[in-house]
Image (cartoon, rainbow, N blue to C red; front, side):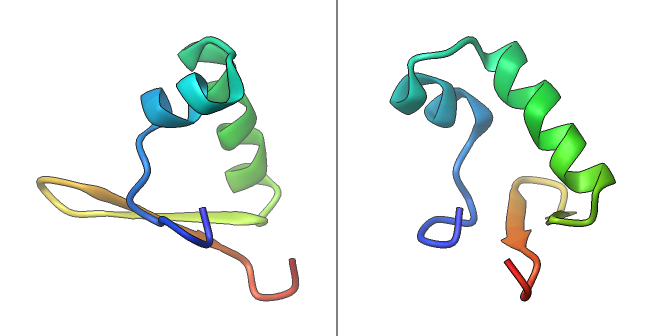
Length: 53
């Protein structure tokens, strides 16, 4: 995500060879913990890893 903040959950699932639901659930936990930030516009979403990670 640091390399590509515009990566889609489906792309991550393919790369990691897991289901998209797994990526969604894990990313939600990271957002809730403050490790990952999500900023989205009407057409795309950007992911940002917290500075201390």
